[in-house]
Image (cartoon, rainbow, N blue to C red):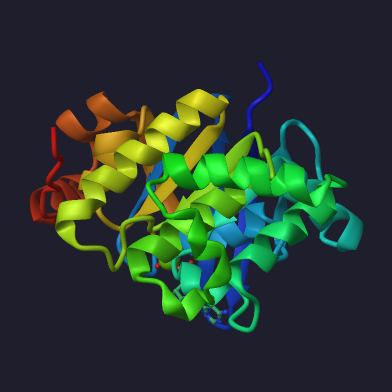
Amino acid sequence: MTAAISVDNAFVRFGDTAALNGVSLEVPQGGCFGIVGESGSGKTTLMRAVLGLQKLEKGEIRIAGRVLGTDRGGLKQRASIIQPIFQDPAASLSPRCRIGMLMDEVGTVLGEAREETRGRLNGLLRRLGIDPGVVDKYPHEVSGGQARRVAIARALLMRPSIIVADEPTAGLDVSVQGDLLNLLQDLRQAENITLVVISHNLAVVRLIAEDAIVMRQGVVVEGGEAGALFSAPGEPYTQELLASWPHISVRQ
Ligand SMILES: Nc1ncnc2c1ncn2[C@@H]1O[C@H](COP(=O)(O)OP(=O)(O)O)[C@@H](O)[C@H]1O
Ligand SMILES: [Mg+2]
């Protein structure tokens, strides 16, 4: 089966920093794929490259088997297949637009009637546990947890086959982190989406991912089935991550 995302020997440099130093990986279709590594290891750069927001110095990225451009057309094509949930959702939603307007833009892109988009949106917001009245608010008027759920709703509204979530639990109260991950997992299953979860917190990736890679200084140090990887890591770096990260609480 064609990989959802395949990255072949990707290089990105910022000055003297090699943010991606020959990264290769294959994200299989379906399921949840985890990317873990300490801050500065290149996770967000990798995500931006996959989204076409960061050019590669060298290497190739295929989304659902295709190499897509970084021009307007390429970005539009990507957006219909792969949707991001950025680390700071409030900042990634335009501050001057009410949330409803940001959602209507998705309908415009899809060529869908406004009522249909709003109908689908209401269903999604309900599943995410948000009052549909949120559409009348501005992004800065909602809490961090709500903003992240709004960003998830907007990503799902595009009907993507892949979602990439960067640090989805960052800034959230520990008590709601597990809930949000469970919710993402449920939505992924219901919509048959490939989910990529990026986190510096190994507990997050361990909780949700079936397969994972560990990044350090722009390099993939190891990867494999998440259960095996984290119960018996081969690399000292992964062992350190495993020993140092706090656990996450999940309400049953
Ligand atoms: N736009 C940028 N300009 C300069 N350096 C950057 C930029 N983006 C990332 N970096 C550097 O690249 C490295 C990887 O960063 P990043 O991909 O954000 O890591 P992570 O998401 O794992 O914390 C870091 O050393 C970071 O400082
Ligand atoms: Mg990051």
